Length: 126
Image 1: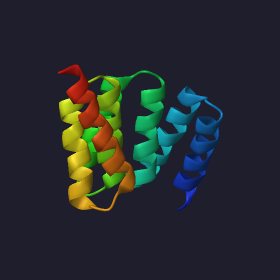
Image 2: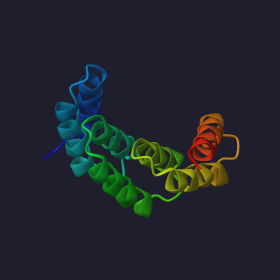
Image 3: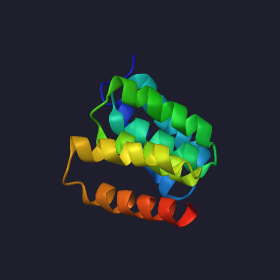
């Protein structure tokens, strides 16, 4: 039987791997943390970030969509989905994600800045 906080141990291991750019190992740890506690949002966020670092963008987007469906008011999920969409140069979709972050938290300075940069990018390519 798993101990109550084993998910935190797996998450901490994942963070250590993530910080040392061992993204496959980090991904496995974050997945294990989610298996043990499916509503542990930080593991979802960092699992998506690991997928992004591994250039597995479609998987990252699918993961963020799954997490957002269960937790629609978590700004970190929306923001990271938007960042992934920017990487894919899907700026209009990314802008909608940043708008959602600001709808939830109008004072999110990082989302405000990223939204402005995304608009500037759209203007420069149109």
